[in-house]
Image (cartoon, rainbow, N blue to C red; front, side):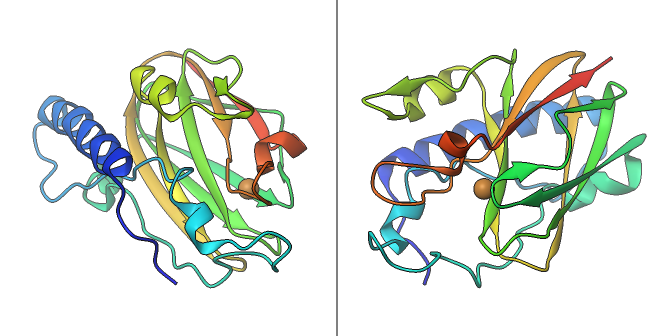
Length: 185
Ligand SMILES: [Cu+2]
């Protein structure tokens, strides 16, 4: 069920790792941290148009577990088909752990777009290059009935939370309104 690694994915992962490395350096002691990468481009490989939900058994891949003991705030998020449980979440700047519960029937991800606003689109699809340029990062999609943790060191600002797991060739969860706002103060 695992998708293959595409060049875009590799680039995004490398960029995200570089960002996390910087964040880890700021946190002084964060050994063994890893980062999620944007997977919106790779998930369709598991999907057949008209098929049932792709990747429904996808396991949780926690992000930056090594940072979690140093977290100074926690944000609880529940995701369903196809929404976040709140329109807006808040957190204090610093190391923040997101505890995400998937109460839906589909796999969901939590992607972060620094600066907020709409997810950049190109030809009706999320624009991976623009997302990368904007410094987007994510907790990769995981299946129903799981709780998955992701920890990041966040600067104050507004972030758009979104999910671009595909529904079919032309639509993602984002098209169904799966987005929210995170305000870090
Ligand atoms: Cu979703």
